[in-house]
Length: 414
Image (cartoon, one colour):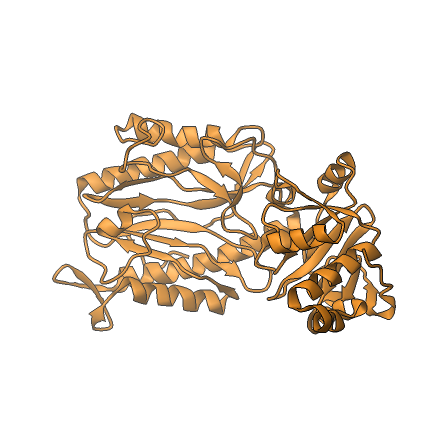
């Protein structure tokens, strides 16, 4: 293994205030218990664990090393300035410190990269590393060929650490949810102010389509500093598939599910909210299902507090839906109608993360941010889902969502 002194190309850093200062004690305990020198992440900032530990974002893979002594980054020269300014790291080294370009010229792109990472590890007195389950096989094999011990950390310790949010993180998630509420209000306004012609909603003389509503949602989110890759505006039978994005004209007298899950462009933290609307009367059975869903949503919220399990909360929603005569996956694992998904999930740097509010959901702890989103689905009637985002507290929860719940759309919801 190579050891190269980085000299002036390595910067010791003050802690950044831009991002959360991760408490990695559990990870360091794992390293000590397994006699491992460090924990290495090799990914870009799309990986939430990478972003969380490093406090830094880059479009290309970079390396984050956690040891008992601190957190160190290995980045390209292009990213070095931002990393020294923004990262939650004790030191940042650029690849040039290990003659990266020369190694690539001599050994090729793959081997040159491996030798650079190997030099970085050796320079930190690291011979054995733990890596996440998503660690690149090519990097692991290459480091093993250079004499390093590479062990997969199977429990997802960093992901579990991320589940408990700091006050700073809660502020970012709530800011994203406020942007989400503005986008939902714009979508609801379109539904409320559209006219009805031959059973179709019409806006500005054209049929109001799922695509038009999604466009307005996206524009609103951009104005609030958020973005999204996709959203759901699904009408009628489309809404009976929980993840059907929806398409085409929106109909009067049909259930319309709007599920928005944006991400703040600066901080990376997500929000999540769903409302179900109907412009005009969707029928007695649809209205009954809506009320049952709302009762299940209320029951699940009432069950949330530290010490209960995600399974307990999910069970509270299932109790209401089953008592009303509708199937759940608990009562019938093969059902294709009724309540056909879990009650919720964690939300943070990933829109779906720990903890789970499902039959397998573990104990909820203060600082967990979870969605509560029961639903009832049937192509013959449509789909219904109501979703809020809450933070678990010692004796209950705090709702991070301030948006009203109601079936009939209005133009003044916020």
